[in-house]
Image (cartoon, rainbow, N blue to C red; front, side):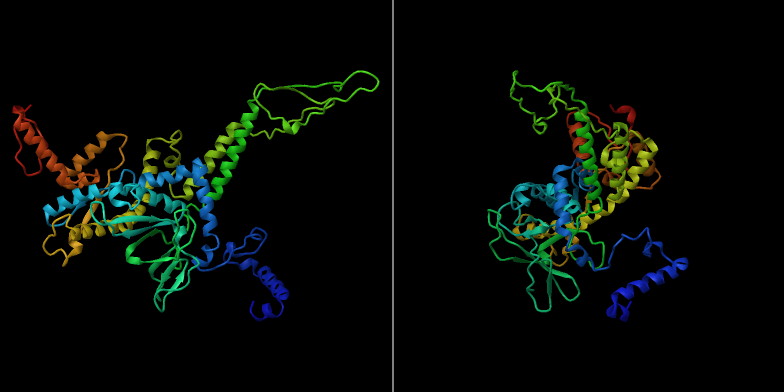
Length: 488
């Protein structure tokens, strides 16, 4: 509106309305109009931090409230936890030193125990990973501080910190030219260089100055959806409103059904209760506010009172359809199928269930990659360096000259059990015989390390020979096939 808006806001508003009415026939975007349909649609453009900072704490508090009290909320969150982490991942070291690979894999399995990886000694590493996925959905993110402490397998542990502990009121940067926004210190390129963490006494009251932790010692696990976003936002934000509405409907329907199940008898009196005579004393008038409807209740009414019942008329059948429709919208808003969150397969067939599983996997894979790249890999690299420094494993030659090669690895995760394992096994057999997949890739897809599998096969074979039993084991391509007729 320009100058007119500064001189006379009312005339500027009228001019804008007239212009929109004139251009109504040649409009480009219906969503950009201020007509009758969009009259109450108020929106504005700001940076991500300006948009989020005023609502972040409120949305997070409401999401946590639903986490504590809503089964529907937990059904959607647990779907992500179950599919992104599940039972955890199996480490497969990929260095050129086989002895180092075996030693570091064995030590990693020991370090993942709660007393070795958690400064509080209360969570195993995979419990912390599951918590990270859960807090990302509900709180928006979580921080892990790399702590180098004594005790445990190696002098390295993780400290989990909630995003609430970022000191959002701290504005004094540590380095000249930096700035602090929301407890995070940024350089001139808006790259995080450190975090200001609030300190608490054992009673939970803030009494100490904020602690600065450099970025290289912190894993800030959250997702960024806008270039200007610098802090987390609960990923359930778009659906918690609908979850609350559905919870209210379920509660109201439940109360209604409970009331309908209460068989009660009300005795209506014609005359008031009192003494006989010329001046009878009036009986006590019953206060209905003190009466609660209970099964098998028998009570009387005041003389002249009648019962009036309000019946909304919503049937349980319609309520079930409404709950299912709302649940589908909530699941869709989180990018997952209704069946994955609800475990309700009553309307699914083999093809639809298979297609839903494929689509869900496409949704979960990016989150699995993010977890591996930003949390698992970071923790593993720090673990390997600490193990070498502390002497928990023998330092391989040239380790410090090529740390990346000596921390090379892959994460193997066991897939879901399929409905028809025979078809899956036949598919793997065909892929192997047609050279579409090597056998180690098939084992990796099954969450197994090929070296571990071969070692176990060798142990079984040696033990069978030791006790004089000819036991047929699968042979690798290019190996000598034994005469199966002479074997048991």
